[in-house]
View 1: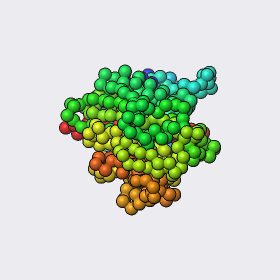
View 2: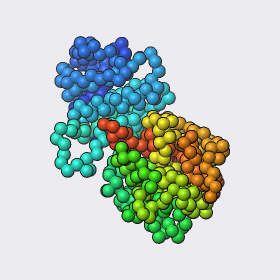
View 3: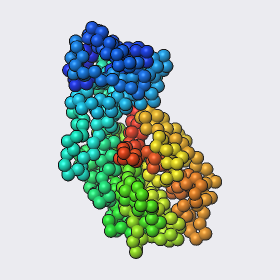
View 4: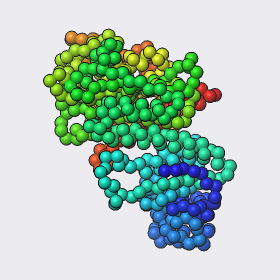
Length: 501
């Protein structure tokens, strides 16, 4: 979808669908009022006949409205006029409006919702939201379809953000940011939605290499099994033992600042298919374990956005990638492995494999002398039980970093919720035979998983995002969401703003 700004008055915009707001009690926004005036009151007449009152979550599309240029007008319910329009409420409204516009089958959309005042948000942010939400609504995954589905609605090919002349610069900037983030989210979704027989560790590495080829400031390298053995990554390699697909440690480096400036290291879990290994999972919904590499997909997507925006930062993305399958050579419950850090781990459950590949990647990350390390992983079902699909679980050993990520999530509409990381939880990981066990029992499973990882970053400013509940949807809407690319991108934008200040 191509995006642009437009300063033409709403009634004269040439578009397939103009999106305008109406508050409860039929309190008009400026665009709605202008359209009604141009139509000689016909817009309001149709709205009244449809008994549309501007309630939040409702939409009304009116075709061929006399006296106006747009082919159709999509009236969006904005909710109570007297209540402050919060960012959360606006994001929900924008998401619903974008889906309604895209589902209408229109070839082009013009967005006139940025004129609505939003608490503590500017025109640039609202323009960015328009692009991101329209991009999300227009996303289609057709890579594996042999024949095009003729019954599927084609998304618009063009979209514009309506902006008064004084806000045109803000709109242009917001659109540029939104396009970059939307592209990163789309890339992460594409990688996540591919089946495990296509998106193998080697394929994931190839896509990262292609990303580096697109961006001058990004370099790529990959560590194969031989190199990982030399480095002593016994924990990561133990997960790969049951698979015929060779593991890979993918490394992307973006250099947008001086070499002396510290790096932000993003580490994403890349289990391209997780059967659970010898501790095999139930067969129902096991197909969704192709999504167990969404952490890796998200750090690759965030790197795409970062490079597109040319941020004044140094960012490294690490993606340890492997399959986790049962085999005569696979790791068994009770096996003990040695990590790159020299710590031994008793594997009590082979389905707790994400932490086993992440711990070696976290140790590898130290060579970059990072300012911060942020890992993200579809790590535990326990986090899904705790937080559902609304927020990612956040754990950190550095409160300023946690605060920055929480704030970034709020601004991006990709929220996280901080969970405890107290020393008492690490007690559950004690082993009779090794330095640490890889699981700590049923209680507080998401916390003990984070505690395990914390043992490998004691000297680093570190945060862990458990995205098991947010990285994909199940049921009829099954598919990767691209979260938390939005949160990561906002964090990087905030850091870039600090670097430029």
